[in-house]
Amino acid sequence: MDMRSTRSTVTFSHPFNLPEYPGELPAGDYEVLVEEELIQGLSFEAYRRTATYLEVRGRGSHAGRTELRAISDSALNEALNQDLTTSKTNIHSDAVLTRQG
View (tube, rainbow, N blue to C red):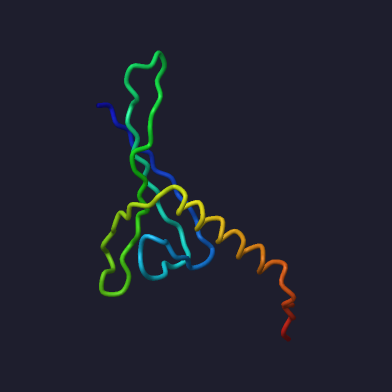
């Protein structure tokens, strides 16, 4: 069975939650690992996604540890869309920055 893995980086501007895991994760850059397997018997090369993982770095007493958390594509996309919506809401808020001095 031929497998391949690809890595990408996603950026969250705000703290976020994942439905599969308790607790809030901080804003920042996160590595996403996608594993795929080659679909056999086709006349062309095609892959099927078998797993998606979000790499979460430990905090506090767990600093220095890294955990790969299995996540569904839909949950990752939902979290990213929520982060984008939150960013757009903050840009269009009625809050005004005033210059001090």
